[in-house]
Image (cartoon, rainbow, N blue to C red):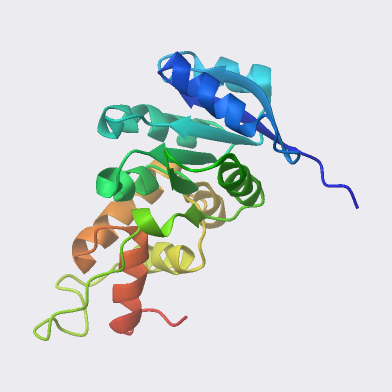
Length: 211
């Protein structure tokens, strides 16, 4: 069976980056670039015009400055986002904003195309270099978090353990994606975690969820 190429919209502020990513994906048989835009463009209009299955978003060297734009896009648009990062420092922020995947900016075309296909299928993709293993729990840390999780936070945590995106969690629980992000931030704070993955690891060790 022939697989339909995934439709990709490139988002990058640097025109050279947009051209470079387009060139990387140009010879990938299962990926087709339908258009490109900058983060300060009207991304809703661009998404409507280009009808992407996935957005590949190059966050450049100052990813923190684009988190708000990324978060709005993830809240408002159907297409999942695979973000390209210069370093791991903002990885947890980018994932909390709703990105379905993160790759280094140096990723090869085949890797970017594979991540796009995975994201379009509802999967999450995180390059190991951008997701360091969770630190071990110190001996003094108790079985439960300092603050107990609410019932809703437990539901969100269970969804995180299943690899659900913010959008999927919102639909499943009947709440907004903004509320999902609020609960995720609360969970990270209560568990002393820096990322969704670390939160799941810590919750599993504390017996809050079973994998």
